[in-house]
Length: 159
Image (tube, rainbow, N blue to C red):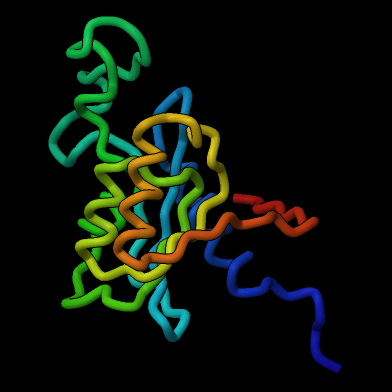
């Protein structure tokens, strides 16, 4: 008899996004993303961090203060990193799993890339203008979005 407690597709791909978030060095918000084809093949992953060549020891991680001394002008978001890490030719029809609802800038890139569905874990900034704009754009572009409801499952990785 086959095993019955295996990971469902959504659990698996959100798990990959959560694991990717663990690569982030952001002390306050670690975000991961996983882009998946219509055939359930992982196409790309990303996490929030500094751009290649910009040392995460030399650039700020602060959330408050003068703009040039905070992380916001420097950090590349997980969704954008996943899009930029993709080495294929087309993401049309794919879906993206992300641990945090995408900001308006990442949403523009998601729409432009042809991704057709956003599955997100947290929507903690749902009242911000950025998230409201993101949802407005996704609706207008016909891109579905759906909150992932965690399964009552715990997985421990011994690394």
